[in-house]
Amino acid sequence: MIAAGTVLGGCSAGATGSDRSGKVVRYQGWSGDVTWPELAQDLGLLGDIRLEWIGNTISGPQDVQATVTGDVDIGGAFNGAILRLAAAGAPVTAVLGYYGSDRGSYAGYYVPEDSPIRSPRDFVDKKVGVNTLGAHHEDTLSIYLERGGLTPEEIRSVQLVVVPPVSAEQALRSGQLDVAVLSDFKREKAVARGGIRPVFTDVELLGAFTGGCYVMRDDFVATNPDTTRTLVEGSARALRWAQTRPRDEVVDRFVSLIRRRGRNENAETIRFWRSTGVAGVGGLIAEREFTIWLDHLIADGRVEPGQIAPQQLYTNEFNPFRR
Image (cartoon, rainbow, N blue to C red; front, side):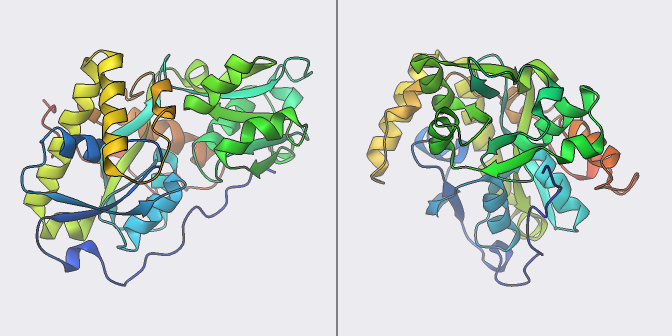
């Protein structure tokens, strides 16, 4: 069923980035993809800041969990997951939007062409494949079903199945799933093979929006304000570069960077990149990008009214594109 689920564990009191001083920023990457801090470094926008890659992440909740526990100094997650963190008292703040949905980049809820699933009510008792629980795909589906008039009991009948994104298409085509959420190059490749169609997409449901932000621990920011500013400003400028340059130029830069860093990964899938998906100029964060999910979590009873003020969740202080 669609369950709230605890996205992350409790906040660790162990070693954190704020325990260290200097110009090294630890982070996790994504296989076959490029983060905005990585692009900023490649474009020469980080000054004397050095990025320390400690490995690849598998999901936003895992990445921000590593930030909370101090294993990395910056991590990115879905804004609804950040809300859950804030409700649990995690000492982190969103500093830059980093992914989202628009006409080029979006998540679609796909079914076989001959599937009877065509409307919210058709999801009752069905299996839906998502990349992780308590994140973007789950909350988007919940909003879609709520707007479609389903009762809480009917929504709970929908079974979410965690499936690695690279396996979602196969699971859908083999009948293991009734619906699979596909995005990025996985969606592009699956659609090109034919035989599937979207029931809805997140951008059709919600309009263009920034879906997730990079977060940093409050103690790291307080102890390392200059490092924080340089990192966020450089990443914002790198994101803006990608928002304004021709797509082919951006993709070529990504491919070159992936090949040069030597992590034994596929550099060709990035050629399916379509856009940043980020709504704000240079990753500026808008309040709406949290209230969308906060309203849903309050209606669902997972957050108490007044428990969280959206303005306390993020800051644009370090973004050079703020007005």
